[in-house]
Image (tube, rainbow, N blue to C red):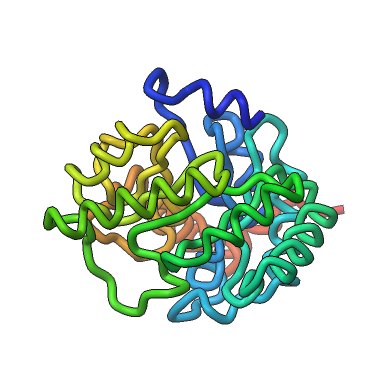
Length: 254
């Protein structure tokens, strides 16, 4: 499946979305190349202000659910903050994730010096997706990166090191259009953008943002439907039916 993703480089856009449950995964699996069980589950499902406190066991539980709904997409699981501080720890925890979830790869965020972690995982036959730009596990303040020539060159150098370490792809988060374009042109591996323009080889969004469920709508998110309104209407109808004794009807009773 990894080879299929690699062959799409500069030929066909790669479609990626997040999922945290079987039900949602089974829907988006029909349209995606990659499904990511992201540590964004901390914000989306548990209402945390950041991703730092999501645990290995929690992300494994969600990945196990997602695996049941994923048949054709490549399944990637985020490694939570603190689970890959050194090579030995990273390999141990990545193997636990893969064994318990049967995922195809793990994703780790770059802190500009953990390239040996990627190469160590790859040497252990573990497929790795990289992540540069705004990396929530390591950066507190959000800002668009790659707007100056100096910043752009640093990002390009970082991306090249991620590739050299053996990652099969790299997420570019909130990087300027020009920087994303140059990185994508220079790398042999696919770039997956989020808030980094259409210049990337693929795109990823948090599905809950895309369907209007999360309430989080930064500039880089396009809301394709408003699931909040749909659910609200359904619940309102249910409430009214119960109060008017229209539900349960004879058809809903034994």
